[in-house]
Structures are given as structure tokens and as C-alpha cells.
Length: 152
Image (cartoon, rainbow, N blue to C red; front, side, top):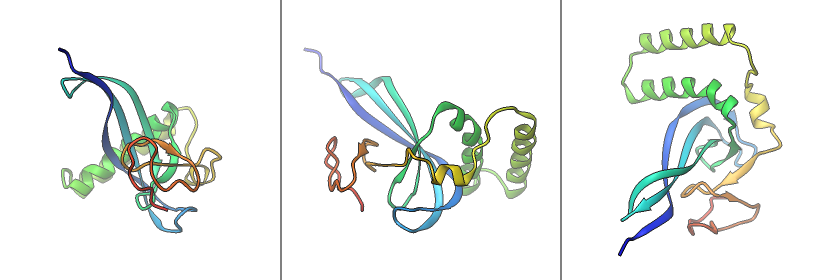
């Protein structure tokens, strides 16, 4: 008898990016990047990831937007540096050096630049379940995927 399944999710906080005013909950907090990985499991052990999604969201109400690969490439190093500083794994001097390297790399790199205003005013703004990352509709009180209460 082989027991297998799918739909198990792991959630990893990549780190905070910038302080932004949330139009949904009216709080001004540092928005964070969160990675949601959905796994195929064998005997309840995650074996193969079959879905990976990145979200930029308000830490208070989980209201935010899905990031595409170009946006993620540009802001993920900043989030990782911020998280290392928060966790105390690097000093402020090392942090400033990393940020300067990122700034010099960003000025020489070609491509789109993500602005804070463009992320907060995007038309793709959605609300996601805090428990599993499933997109929810306006007025939903509980997640249809995992049953977690949706914070309004």
C-alpha cells in the first residue's frame, strides 16, 4: 500500500522590502515577499514541488500581489539583505555594503525598475489566504482551500 498526496504547502518568508500604505487595512508597514511551494508527497514527506508562487503582501492583512519572475529577480536580493540584517546574521556595515553593491548592479543592469507606487496601485491587487496562499474573493470569511479565517 502506497500513500501519496498533493497539495501540501510550505511557506517561507523571504524578507521585507519597503514601507507601504495598504489601501485595504490602512496600515503602513514593511511589505514582505513570501514564497509558497506546493508539494507532491509520499508517506506524508514532501518529494516533488509542483507549484512555486511569490507574493508581495501587507504583513497585517495579507492583501497584496503576485510577483512575476522579472519583478522577483529585481527585489529578492533586497529582501534577503533586509532579512539577514533583521535576523542579526550580518552587521549594519555589511548590510550597507550589500545595498551599495545592489544599487551599483541595478544602475548598470537593463530592464524594468519596480517602483513602490506601481506595486501599490497595480490592477492585479488580490487578497490571499494566510494559511495556504490561495487567492480569495472579496467578502470571503473563510478560505475555500484550507478553512482558515480570512482577516478583513
